[in-house]
Image (cartoon, rainbow, N blue to C red; front, side):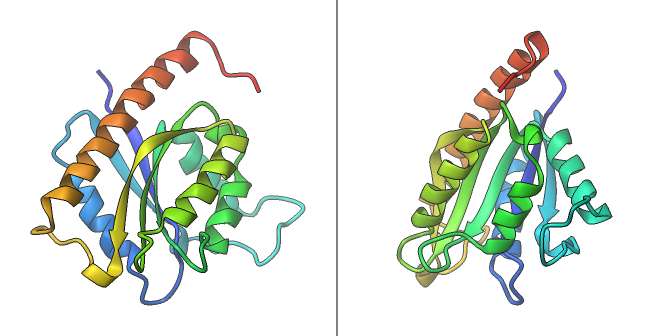
Length: 184
């Protein structure tokens, strides 16, 4: 079977962010799974315009291609002021049909809240885009420290559960899209 193509999206573009380190940890959790092909999509590497242009720019088209090629997503998001970062919302809005009938999982982080407020709002956004969000989340409390290879069994277990749910939905929706194209 062809591996499920998962795009892991780093949702923060802040200098000194924890998102790239958390992404490396999460990708390490996914690497042993031969049935998953993981690509990291770092929003910090895209030169998006400050305002929404009348015509898509080359970076916008490149990002939309990444979304289109992926069959499932993991959004790595911080929580800023009980929400998710504006650059993440901007990037999500550049694609539309490309999100449809694909599963989305979340690895969130913050101080005490573990990023749950950001995930709650992202679920609403992805539902509007006809994407399927998986139930379980990996939530990281930065006050307890960033995950490391020696991190708690609970975090590793949460990552395994998220990957299992993403795999199930990703394969089910892959088959569904192949049998009957999604119409919104």
